[in-house]
Length: 63
Image 1: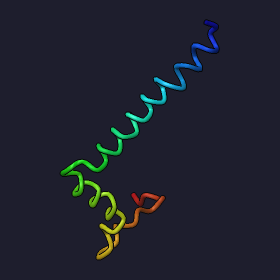
Image 2: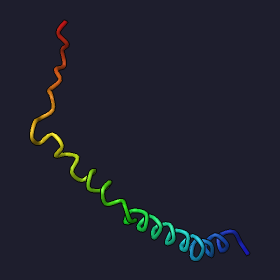
Image 3: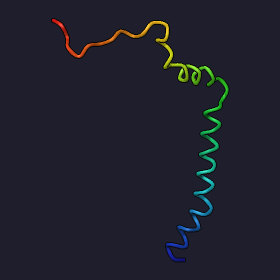
Image 4: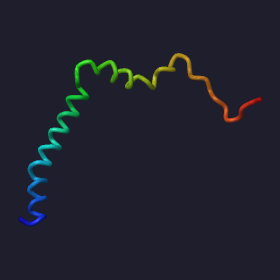
């Protein structure tokens, strides 16, 4: 069997299976039980200083 045919066979079968299992594993990891709080915290992180803006930092330090 020549190298191209062998690599083509691997890509068509085993690598496709490995990539599919990896994708499904990542999807299950993202939607696992208990991760809702972490995702909610990340999603609302841009609104943390909505009530009171963060202190502005100046480029020059007064000394």
